[in-house]
Image (cartoon, rainbow, N blue to C red; front, side, top):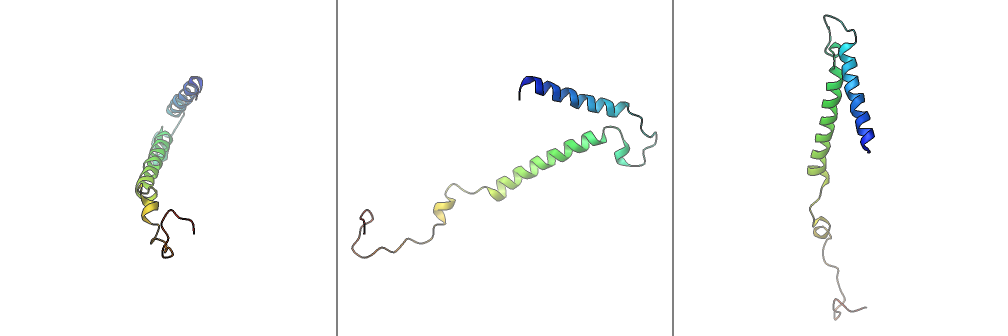
Length: 89
């Protein structure tokens, strides 16, 4: 992304948090989501959890050792008697 887009993204994020702080809200919040900036922190924590869980899944479940395919090829093929490995049959 170009520098202009990063600056615009930063301004939108800062503006979002500032607007969340100055908007009218209940003086005695009854629920957790009624506190100011709750959704900003909730979104950040949610994205961080997604990143860390996906990195863990990629490392411990999806990634295979370097010799994975050569190790699991099965037994050597049976060659007819009298043929060498480089010969055409």
